[in-house]
Image (tube, rainbow, N blue to C red; front, side):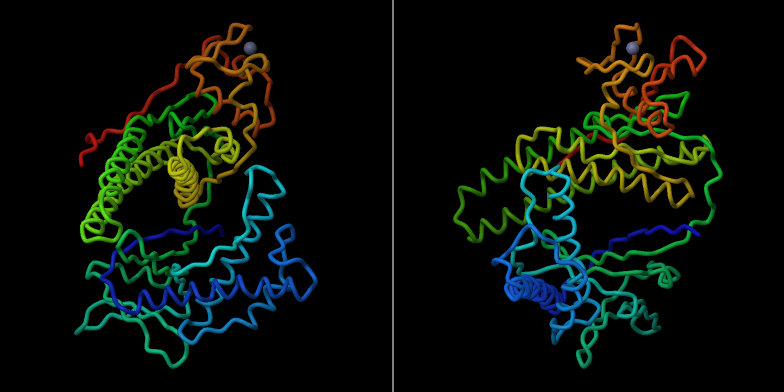
Length: 412
Ligand SMILES: [Zn+2]
């Protein structure tokens, strides 16, 4: 039976132990860095060798060497897994050549999110102290005891997979990740192609209709975020670093940013939910997403911060579609989307669109964002470059239908 994960975030009150635990995770991470240098040196590799991924053997060797007096053994292992995952993605990136200069994990950390696995998590519901979650540390250490809100759904406890203790912009949060089985395996036969773009977050084509989910509101939030950041950094730069006023403004800045980020997140949730709901009613069995690594590298960014944000949003859209679709039994597949925005769906000629309409010498004319979605679908079905317009039985395709997100204008 297919399964899917769902996450939930919960804000919690600070406890002194939290920063100790996250500092401990960072210490384990720093030990990984040191042990890797030692491992490489022992085997005659130059110091901080970067071109080779040391696999399972090294992981097992390191696992035996790592200890920590405070952390639960599985929380310690989670750091190790994260360290090697980071090596794996570094070597994959290096191989694919898609990013200019990938870096292996080499930066020391002062604090790091701590992960607790199932056996270290216990939910308690007492009459006196209400709902709580207990997190285990190393043997002999007292457990961390965190109160939960009274409306917390305890029935989810059996599905819990991991729990992360995070610190972000002055706020402590718990990230629960739950594992569920899919209730209804997908029955739909239809296939929908999805183009995730900068202008419109989602453009879909299901063989008949093209739908465009408007991205104007989300883009305005991004612009607003950048504006707020710029304004604050100007004021903050005039203060003495770490002075009382500096801290006050910095805290205020992140409070504002966190609020905008939540609005962006909320908008992405609304758009993706709307799309998945539509797929369900249409009997869609498979959603085809274009592989986004291409877009990320083709886009030019003004600032580093911008880039981070865009990457986050793109990653978020396909992540959200994937988990929402899987939870209702729709399959999600990813294909390489090269040339899908340039190829004419009618005659197969390649031409880069110059404005918002795609026009081909064969007479084909369509909204440029729809073309990408049509071709992604065709590519998956194996008819890429074959005429779709004829297949659809009409000389003129239905114009794309737009969906605008009905939301209030961003306010401070
Ligand atoms: Zn053409």
